[in-house]
Amino acid sequence: MNRPYTLIAELTYRCPLACGYCSNPVDYGGRTPLDTAAWRRIFREAEELGIVQLNLTGGEPLLRDDLAPLITEARRVDLYVNLITSGIPLDRNRVARLRDAGLDAVQLSWQSTDPDECNELAGMAVYDRKLAAAQWIVESGLLLTLNVVLHRRNLHRVNEMISLAETLGAHRLELANVQYAGWALVNRLALLPTREQLDRARAAAEAARSRLGGRMDILFVTPDWYADVPRPCMDGWGRRFIVVAPDGAVLPCHAAQTIPGLPLDYATSRSLTDIWEHSELFNLFRGEEWMPSPCRTCERRAIDYGGCRCQAFHLTGDLAATDPACRWSPAHSLVQQARLDADRLASEPLIQPRLLKNVS
Ligand code: SF4
Ligand code: FES
Image (cartoon, rainbow, N blue to C red; front, side, top):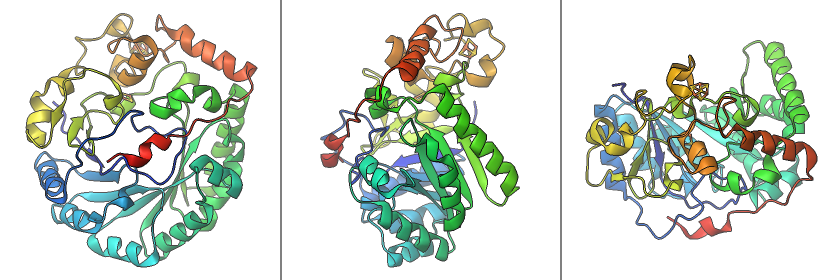
């Protein structure tokens, strides 16, 4: 059995922003969040399990008052600590405190290079605050990655995004197309780009990558709905990642909470090692026994592991189905139809996840 490499700690699902592609569950609420002591214990258990990297995320992790002490504990047990944030709410002193607590790197989300569009996509005035946050992060000496979620509203701005990242002094730019789970699936018709948009954006990213010659990393993640074979989502179910949700549910994938009826285990009642090795949930899709045809005999089965389980469930109702993003899936016509719709239909308005304001 593989050892996990990364712990994704979803410290809270609360968030001041309301992005229409949020991957948080659409109906989460009312559950008690883990306290500081529980998270500290989870970090120690992660180190015992051999985990190397900790991603602190949410929702918005900056909404937790105990973020600095949590980082201190993570560093004490030798985890590499990466903060994934919208940059709101933040100020220069807090950046310095988080760095002094042991933070290694920050991934700052960015909605658009156009201030009005950025604010509209985020559901509040964030653009100027993000500019300030990026400046404080770089001047504090922390490594800055700019994370841009791409979709049909902002794909034409890839060159502007690259210029912005260079100007801000980012060491890495992640241009990741929306993954259709959570709110993004609700908003599919507003977000799915056309093939032409996608090809132009990818070419712009490739040109910049050779121009910059390694001075700034640029990652461009193609949406698997246009790739014809799926991505190895989460690098395979229960292979490299452990996600802990705000209430302590331990998951192989951040979107697994969107699948009803899964046998959940909680970090409050079992150790991470016990859950990783023995829980029913983590073992559901390990190995190849569970695979349906055509995955079972496909030469890519050790590359993509049959694709994304959450996508398979949300599109077909069957958690063990071949991912419909795959051209050999019996349900691939669903994805083909979505691509045709993206080319044919006018963009729909985005529904923003206001519901998430009141959750833990
Ligand atoms: Fe991957 Fe299964 Fe498609 Fe083969 S058939 S490419 S293993 S999803
Ligand atoms: Fe859950 Fe892909 S999003 S397995």
